[in-house]
Amino acid sequence: MKRAIFPGTFDPFTVGHYSIVTRGLTLFDEIVIGIGTNQSKKTLFSVEKRLEMIHQAFDGNPRVRVESYNSLTVDFALAVEAGFILRGLRSVGDFEYERTIGDTNRILTGLETVILFTESAYSHISSTVARDLISYGKDISSFLPPNVKI
Image 1 (cartoon, rainbow, N blue to C red):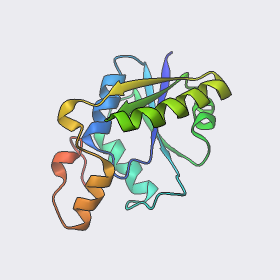
Image 2: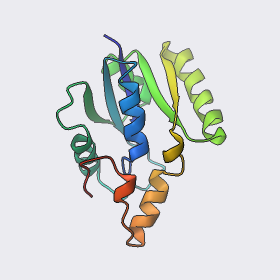
Image 3: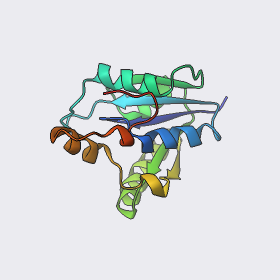
């Protein structure tokens, strides 16, 4: 079985994230979405709320699991017996960061990082922008996957 993790903070989980997972399911038998704890990030939503939102997005899909973790991403990947790390890229700036992390992860564990480019229609969407819009009372429903309610 080809299992990948899709790690992130997902605060909130956007339609861009949803697209990466949906497209990733054409490559992998199962994807474990891992909500990581990042001490340097101040989150808007609790881990429980983020788990709930992602469950709403993939309700009934047995090929998608959602878990939270408080460790290195590679340790989480090994704990869930994933052979790959799935990541999405929106821009050239994302590439340099992802390459450095992907190289490090491969050296540490042998895990390969598989990168999918964000669909053009979603390249402007980020969790940061979504949080900013929420803070000003704006509707972000078009930024969220189907069935997800904040």
